Image (cartoon, rainbow, N blue to C red):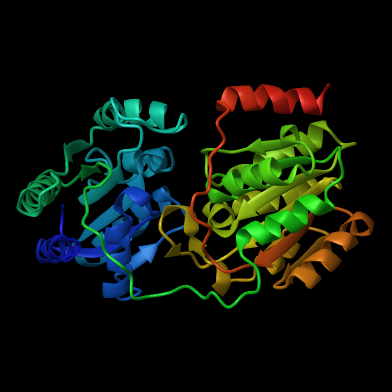
Length: 376
C-alpha cells in the first residue's frame, strides 16, 4: 500500500504548491494526512471540483507552481468546463495534477450509481485530452508514477491524471478533529424530522449517509412510508433543485429537502433560485456537522459560515439555526404558520453508527414507487 507521508513529500519535492479538491473515501487516508500536515493556504477542501481546478490555476498564475486537485470520478462532471475552457493546452495551457478515485471500476462490485461513472472514467478523460495513469499500490512504484505524471503535466503544460483504486493508500489516523460539541448526531435529527412529517409530505434526501440513515430509520421504526422519500445516491449538491421541481409541480404538497452542509456549499447558488421563486410549500432542512462525513470526515466550512443568514438574504421567508432536540422541535412546529420557503439548519456532531445499511432496491425501482406516491 502507498505510504501517505512519502507520497506527499514527493509531490512537494516535484513542485506541487497547493492540494485541493472534494474528498473521496477511496483516498480518505491521504486527505486526512494533508489536513494534518498542511497549512490552510496549502490544502483547501473546495466547494466543488471545478472550483478546485480554478483554485489550482490561480496558484499557478501566481507562482508557476503545480496544483494537485483530487476528486471522486463523479466530480469529473463539475470539472469538465474548466478542464476544457481554462486549463486546456488550447486555451491557457495550465499544468496540474488530478487525482481521481475510480468508483465503479469495471469488473468490481459497487453501488448502482457508481457503475456508469466507472465505465465512463477512462473514455471521458481521453475525450477531455487528459492523459492518465492508474496509481500502483506499492509506494516506490506509486512515486515513480507521480513523477511521470508531473513531468508530463509540466512538459505539455496541461492537466494529467492519476487514477486511484480502492485500498491503494495505507491506513492513516487523523490527529485533527471537527467540533463534536453538539447534542445530536445526524440520525437523531432525522428521527425528529420524520416524526414531524405529515403523511402526504414529500422528502428529497441528499446523497451519502443522510439518505442511508433516513432509509434505515424508516425500515426500523415503521414511521411513515418509505415511498414518500426520494433517496439520492449521487448528484451531490442538487437535492434542493430536485425538491424545487417537485414543489413547483405539486403546490398542494409540502416538499422537504433533507440536505447536508457539504451539499449546500457545493452549489450554493441554488439557494438564490429557491428564494427567488419562493414556493410556499418548500422546507429546507440542513444537517450541518462541518464535514464530509460520508467519505472520511474531512472538514467543510459549514460551521464557520451562517447558512440561515445566507438563505434569508436569498429570499427564504423563515430561517433558523438550532443545536438541540428541544429547539429543533420548536422550529419544526413553527413552520406551518411561517410559510415558505423555509430553512432550518440543525448543527450536529459528526459520526454514525457501525453497520449502517444501504437500500437494497434499485434506484429506478425506488423512483417508480416514489412517483406512484406523488401521483397515485
